Image (cartoon, rainbow, N blue to C red; front, side, top):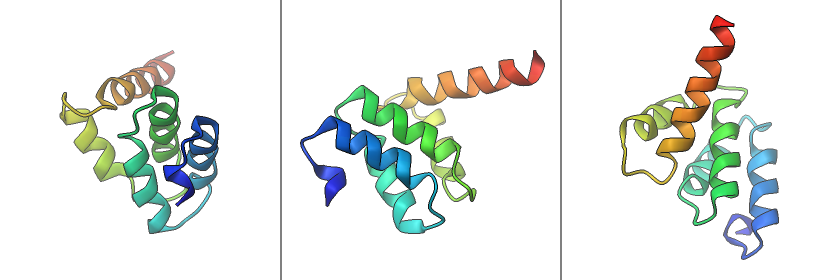
Length: 89
């Protein structure tokens, strides 16, 4: 229920915390947060999905990457571009 808080800071902190959990419920909340109305919440949720200890968010990240209409599409494209640059550099 806290991920629906009106506090942007709380929603961002929840996204940061969830990346450390190996729990499908956390992934489901992160998926919802990628559609949040606030950019900073979406950004943190995307980074958390990328950095999850397990790979359960990978399929969803691919879906966001391939859907230009998704609210987090540009964020995921930027994350993947940065990762690809880091691998080459």
